[in-house]
Image (tube, rainbow, N blue to C red; front, side, top):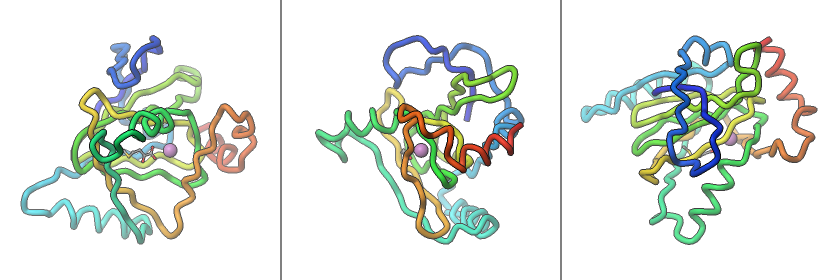
Length: 182
Ligand code: KMT
Ligand code: NI
C-alpha cells in the first residue's frame, strides 16, 4: 500500500498520477479508512486471519470479483469507467486484494486535504475498509488485472450514489461520515 495526493492532471486514470506528496496511514485513519496487510502465504494462514478479521467486525459473507479484459470482454472499458465515477455507499466497502493491483481514490476532508483526491495504491495482500459515506472511486492500474474479496454483513448496500447527482451530500451516510471525521 502506498497513499499519496493525486496529481489531478487529466489523462489515463490507470497511470499513477503521483504528485509526490505521500499520505500516512494515520491520515487515512483520520479519514476513517482502515488499512491492514495480510500477506498471502502459500500455507494459507492468510485465510485464518481474514476469518478473524471478519468475525471481529461482524462480516458474515464474502465473495470475489475479478476485473480483467479477458473476464469482462466488451463490457470492460464501460465497467472501468463506471467504477471511476465518484460515488458513496450507505455501507462500508471492504476489499482484500487476492491478486493483481489497483487504485482506490478517496476524497480528503479537513484543512489540508479538503476535497482533494488521495490515491491509495493496493496490491496482493492489502485489505482496506472505506467507511460508509466517503466519496471514492476505483480503477485498475496499467496492468489491467485485479481480483478482490468483498466482505459484508448481510445484504450489502453497495448501491453507488454518484456525486454528479448532486443529492449525495444530503444522504444520511454522508452526514454521519462527516460527523465522524470532523
Ligand atoms: C468497487 O466497488 O469499486 C469494486 O468492487 C471495484 C473492484 S474491486 C477492487
Ligand atoms: Ni464504491
